Length: 144
Length: 144
Length: 144
Length: 144
Image (cartoon, rainbow over all chains, first blue to last red; front, side, top):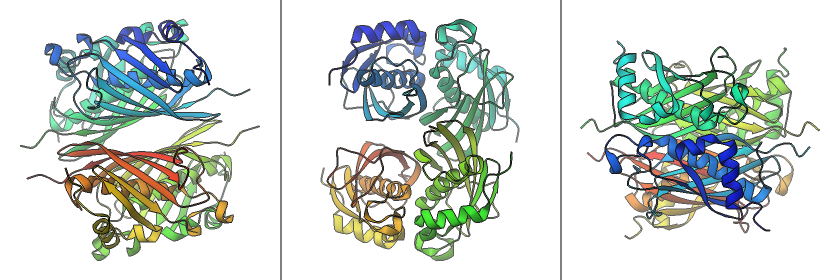
């Protein structure tokens, strides 16, 4: 099955429809079938005080997971604006600091009514030291 | 037991230490023993397109719950910068639109090592129609 | 709106359809509109070693919440065997010991496709010292 | 780092200390560093009515995840009876039926105070069709 959307289509969609991604500085870097890679560009407006090494605040990681799993749904179903987050849960595993954050999301189960996926968030270059892990279910719009 | 912090102390702390609250436009409105009320002032940068009636994006609600439960810990323990979010989970119940969001948080269990609390998020004036409900555990710093 | 089922109907249903409730010793004590009260009768097969004061094992509390929220859905929708648990999350707050466990569940949002509810689990006689708190979403069968 | 416990030690421990595993029919099949494989032997007392093809009830999967992650902690820390479940969350992905259930658990982060892990539950022979996925945090006993 081909990937149903391109990185450019996703970035155009989120920029137009999810202005919070612009506020945070979140973009899509890559897509595959059932998966997405999102990037948060390091920005001191979203860290605790203390400069480059200060801890990144949790809402950045939750926003990455929320949009990352949403976009991963698009790779299977096409752009689906009305796929709605039902619940999202995040475990914070380590302090995040020192660089951009990347979020690798994967759809584990794409059902007709519910899609379930997970996200791994890490500092660029340290993928094996996750800073957060999320899972989320999305309710798909009525097949009609 | 008296409330260990004032609204002004909390707002000074979050403005200085959690710049994301300024980015979102989140402030503390009220505190009681074990509880907080936080406000997000409606801002089109955090909604989907479409003006005043457009849906507020999920990260706003997750950020309200994260800071709201953190601040509720302060009412019992005093300002505790190193109380760290261990996990946060949010269920999204209804579209949120049309006004400021309020988040009422309550500590359910304040342990020596773990604090657990919940948050109800609603549009101002519609407290009985929750738009989101969160729960979270915080790891308290070592008693040392 | 009247309660759509009786305690006897619920107990007959769960005994016939959810044999795990018999294995655990879980029954329905009471119902109201949108709420249920379930009871686990203390049983040493489900505690750690050490007699009456030994800790009750976590699966008892998770099973109480799962069936309790399911039954609370019935009070609004009638008996709905195909309401399926989408996800269930439990926070364990205190050791549970010394008596029967009660689980008070409440539907927070009953949607057409998703029902969301919460459960408070406590030792009989100590309702203000919760031993566990759960929340869960159920996917409702197609209206079609 | 060697695995800190053997399968026989784990099965002796859970049989002696977690009688619920005997009630369910849950045993440890395999261990590696940071991981466990637990087995639930198919048993009609824990399924909905309808014989071999009837759905397995959710509490079986939650119990597998709870004990599986606990045991995975033992592979790193040694047998730690007082590692306590802080919270456990399960997403139910597909009906489970037709055979034994296996649960593969993995510790993602083993901290001094908090251990976090995940579990994949599947019907034996169908590992790529998960029936449930869980994540959980455990609070480790005081180092002191």
